[in-house]
Length: 135
Image (cartoon, rainbow, N blue to C red; front, side):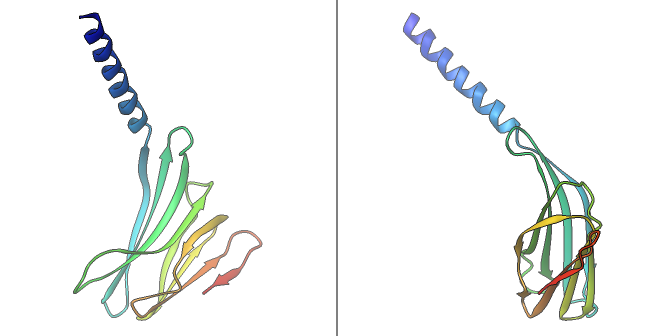
């Protein structure tokens, strides 16, 4: 009987550890916005998520595109990692086929698409002293 209690105790300990580790994946969306293309065919969405937990803390901003009609899956076109909770990210449609994304705080571009579904995507970093354009 003592062996059975030992195994049960180990199982409970393992389950508690798994619950503790999975509970450390804390994430909260702290900002979001949407912008429709001038012709109404596309919607660009942006959101900033703050992650917590040991070894996983960070702030990520993501921009996605989706068609209004037809297949409506979101397609990720930009991911930025940053230190500040707000980077003043803006979605500007220059035409029905050109989305310009600007941000004003320092951030690292982790992923960028330059074209998606016939939409040209350009990025402008307007943070202090930096005016760069990526396309």
